[in-house]
Image (cartoon, rainbow, N blue to C red; front, side, top):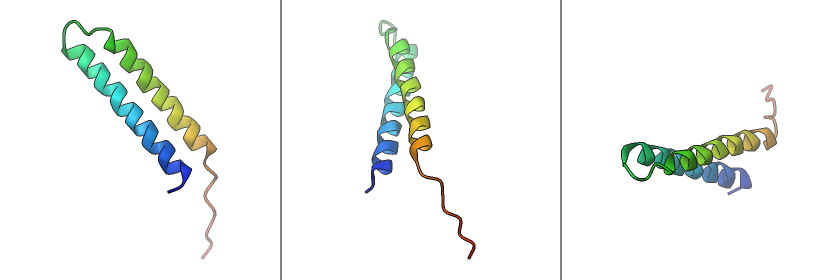
Length: 64
């Protein structure tokens, strides 16, 4: 498994945790601090996804 798979998997896990924290903070009373924490994690995940896509090499052209 190359590094890009690990990077995309890590970003996906971070995005899932961030969205879950956002939802938990909205649904349960008393844990409102999870809304900014989840939002920050989701924002970091989107930035990580952007960086992972920017670092990947461009596809090679196959003329057949």
